[in-house]
Length: 252
Length: 359
Image (cartoon, rainbow over all chains, first blue to last red):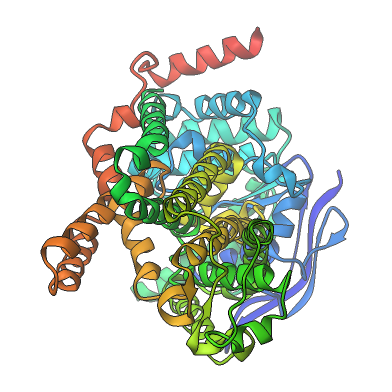
């Protein structure tokens, strides 16, 4: 299996706080990779570094063999590397269909195509994907009026609309009604298997990530603490220490 | 959809009214011309202000730039501009009929093009600013332009320039300027209708709602912002050329770069009608122009107070505008609804989706 994202030796500090300390991670193509770690362990910082939201201090980030650590956010997005946000971000005053239509890929967009009409197939595809996430009936509602969970589903559908090669998901199940979580996990798996999208997922919900990912990285204090299959991670002493150690100390 | 049906009727009525209005109300031709100019202001401001959420206070710059570019061409084609501007009153310069019309036509087009050049060059700078910083930056641009032109003697400086005189009857003259403004407004409506209905429209709205997200999805945000502003500049620049010629004498502060009158009116008209829509700015410009003319006629001396009060009321109590209010009242007429036919449970939907995939 080939590595689609290769992060090697990445350092990132904000002032005196070291958010990522010599982090090396690789995300294999066509699989679901998980990223866990206690609060403040540098997971979101790593995501932001990969998609270009801030420059890294040192190290290298490669996407499909190409160095991307110096590229800007829209350039990286056009390569097919996309992320969703922990705090869901959608276009709140547009209806769901418009949210989907605007998310079409912009890979080979020339000057002329700014003024192109929206083809019928694009609209149909948008509606199919809205069906896929269960928002078809609400497609003509202003998206800002949807519930938080529904907005998350919409954001996920928008990401699929963009036909990314890799999708970085920042806590996809946070804030979603527990009864809907199983449906979401099922859809994430189908996106990976049917659409061939590589997923890289930050998740706090342990049962979710253990059931979803094929291999998992655990970050703690900005460093990679452990890497392995869900079973290996679950039984790793250091991971248990990182998650529970701090807690027991507090309880003392 | 319903909304578009209503829209088509309104546009049809506007077109017919526009064609016959100066013949029905011959005494009001100049007010009607200014009405179309107001419609042009509101529509073009709304491209960046309403659709993209970039509240420019400096679009008046393009008006003045178009106006001055036009007169330089109009005079420069047949005379030395510097000699012309210094000789005002001393030497009478006559333009022949052909010189007048060729000059006017090329002046209007040049006005539009030069304004676009300004939009592209300045746009790359100011579109790096967000929110209030963008508003203040563009306001500064408009004010600075007036000062710069005031000290530029080549075009008459603060004293202004008299424009070539129309070679014909005054009634013909006002009819010609009426129809020039009318044609520009119709063209703008047609272009914007086309542009908003395609990908440009939703990309502009995406920039308005969450620009960072739009960047994150790979949209060329800068390109859209500059192109949107350039469309505005093109039409406002040509409007400036027409308006300057209609007035007949132009100077920088009151006529070419009136940042605190026209420059603010364009914002207020869009807000009043409902920003981010095609119909809103037209309605806003119409209502605003009516109120303005009425206060000028019946409340002379208090007209600025009345207008100021109106602006405060709009900004504080009526931010959504006329169209926005209608949309809140009758959402389904604007295509906002839950699809009842598909109001089945999620699992059934998925079965349907799977069925379609299998077909």
